[in-house]
Length: 145
Image (cartoon, rainbow, N blue to C red; front, side, top):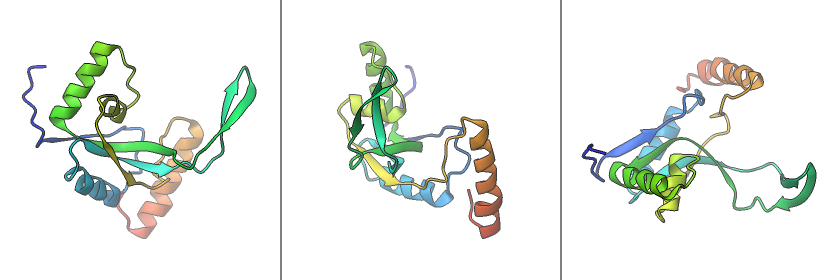
């Protein structure tokens, strides 16, 4: 809490479980975040049908037309992020990512379209898919992850 962070400073938060982020996505994200009062995230539109389930039974289908899956990195104004995280802690709000703290504080979070190959590696299958992306998509094309 003693850190003197300014709103002109940007903080980029990245999940190490996402090794396939594209350099171009980071550049696009930073360009948008620099123009935003609070910050921006990478995200992709949800394409799967999403079900609400109760007691192992489908309770309904969620309208996915406005749903996006958040990714990292995420970039925020340092002072605003600090205040949002402190407020969330004070209020007992569960933060699922830094953007959720910013949202909870009533601040706007811009969305920058990302790519699905920026997957989150959480299962053995994800490890194999990430290795495939890194070996074939990024290396063979000369693209920088």
